[in-house]
Length: 142
Ligand SMILES: [Zn+2]
Image: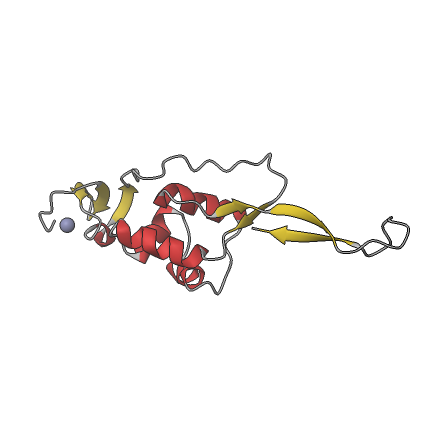
């Protein structure tokens, strides 16, 4: 609508279907969005025993969204969430559940999960060289 060349969005507006850019996508209902190019491989690997959402998930989402030049309302439609809820997530006031996080990963082409590695650390040994209760702690390391 603004005449921008990057018309990657396909929207429904007042009964008409139009190809528009990300900034104009908010004026209608988004039917399809461009596939993000960077970091296309974002499959969530469920076989991993421990996967945590990254600590800076909010800023990752916000930065990726701004890179795509789309407003929060548009992203909210893409992932089928409320805009206000996404705002809380971007502000890291709320942690997205797994299924929403996966939808956000796919919509934005980012990674929101990371593997948590467990490291067994021996703190001390008793006089006989064996371990006593409480000597072995598990440290979660990112
Ligand atoms: Zn436009």
